[in-house]
Amino acid sequence: NETLALQDYNIAHARYSSVVAGSLPILLHNLAGLSCPLQIMLGTRDVLQVPSVEWRIEQMRAVVPAAQIVRLEGAGHWAQYESPDAYNAALLDFLSGP
Image 1: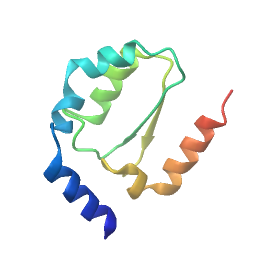
Image 2: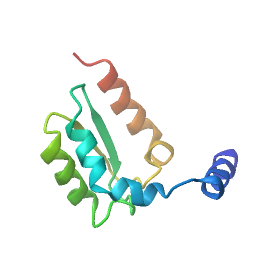
Image 3: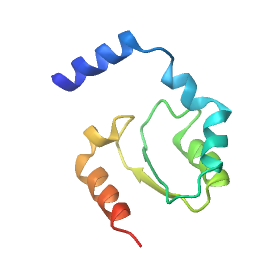
Image 4: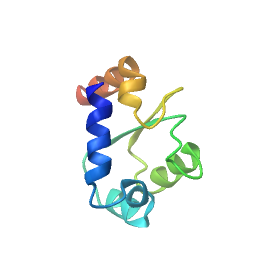
């Protein structure tokens, strides 16, 4: 599968750990500085959201209360591949918003 091959390549050539970077406080700090419309989509089975998806959502909601947060039921970290119909529908809805 081309997608898996691309991910293998990306992991082997990464210059930093995106898992660690996504867990650092700087992410929340940067989100807090945004003034544009923001949509955050998370798979409810995303094991990279430590300690849990709900905890991560609470953290993001605290710094960007106006963000549209979408929980993609049953999807993991690659929600766009695992739940493409729900992901695409949520994205199109967000992009066609007010």
